[in-house]
Length: 157
Image (cartoon, rainbow, N blue to C red; front, side):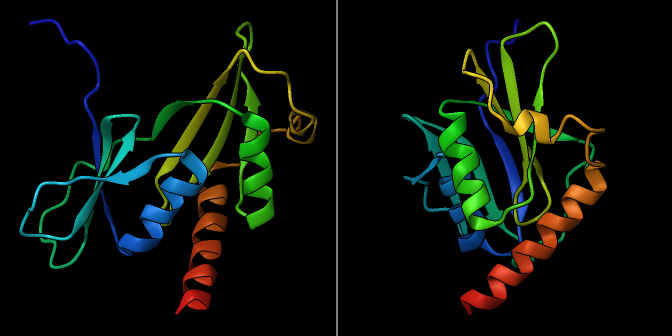
């Protein structure tokens, strides 16, 4: 029974609207058709494939393993992505993978899930020089993202 590909990943969230907006704005996924489950959530699409299932934490009693470190997504337009992230003041980090034509942008969603945006074969961005120092500790980047998310949520209410 060989694996063919990853079908989707599922996350729980505290604020469904904020989480959907994050994945639309920074990852480029689209909120789309979802079966009429008896609990609130959203399915986020890349093209015609729902690759992310989001479930609101409303009345949640069970928890997943919590062992996943991050989710990586192939993307395009690193310049436009970084510009949007900067415009919104979202904490991020840019890295270049050694010996590969790959740049990565790391951000955290409103619930602290680390998202790795992969950009293959795109021109190097100047932000690589800004992050040429030691990488930001993941916990620190997540803390900054959560603080930013709380401020945005407070301003939206």
